[in-house]
Length: 209
Image (cartoon, rainbow, N blue to C red; front, side):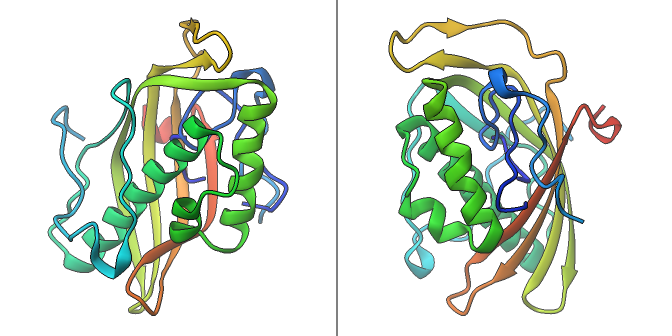
């Protein structure tokens, strides 16, 4: 899920991050096939409905928290705001079991969009959803021209747990390596939306310690 989410056939299959598939299929990291503070903060104040951005509302038992998600640079903050919405869109798709979510397609293109379909399907194949909070922190944005950006960030999934779709039972077995480092490639569309093109992730990366 929790995120950066990558080769078309690659999935993040470990614990229950918003950008990750169920723990029963661990150890395949998305993108492998391709070459701070404790305070909760909101993404950029950029209007969520600008450029037709879809509204995303997660259920009460699921939350994505974004810490340090504002840099003071307007362009970087715009990219981070849409990246946060991408994370929420992926969470929404996993929770609803929607492999063809238009909200995900709004924020993802290319390999990232193709892998998102496989990602959500992996959750469905295991009959799993999830509950809890995922903390996203330590964002680092590197801009490339006016429309390109690379973003690295960490996600802490220690407070998120797999949940059976059928019974609603929550598996609170702790994830051995709850910290995940993501590297995301983004591009700003003609409509002004920062879209995810590629995601790579590494569970247990020392960068997130």
